Image 1 (tube, helix red, strand yellow):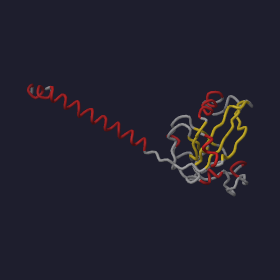
Image 2 (cartoon, one colour; image 1 turned 30 degrees about the vertical axis):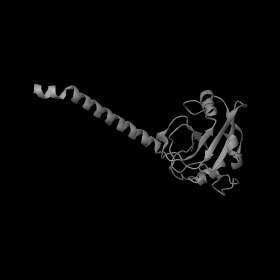
Image 3 (cartoon, one colour; image 1 turned 180 degrees about the horizontal axis):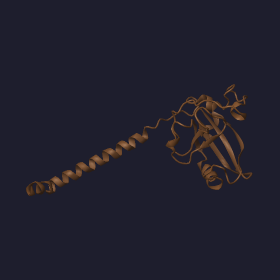
Image 4 (cartoon, helix red, strand yellow; image 1 turned 90 degrees about the vertical axis):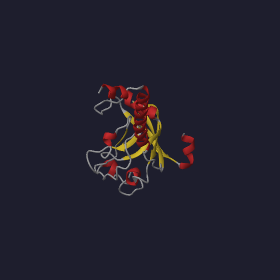
Length: 186
């Protein structure tokens, strides 16, 4: 028995053991990082801007890229006509979840607020952290391309754990950014 133990702890065997152990650890770490990188990139089809005010003071601009090919009804903003003239999603009524292909995998994900399955209206939220617990529950339709500093300022200046803001946060202006101006927005 003593001889078996001494063979195991010979310097050469110990070095081999350490090298094999390190290789195994690196293999697992590399696999985890590759799994994180698998996140699919979805095409941005539209860009919109929101000029945000807190207590009627301009805070800044948020530019959001929208995934119109993945969730066209949600991105369309109008489930009645698809041309912005309908009012169901703004003044009442709800529409069903399109799909949950895009995940809440990083800060800046833009998703629909709902009160359960197939209850999307006109409200949305922007994540400030990776929020995988929202996957399969809320439809992702965009991502913040510029202005996360504004999002964090809203969170820090007006946000609460209850969701009811401490200060009045409004969108003072908004609009679609024409594709010809996308390079200017960077």
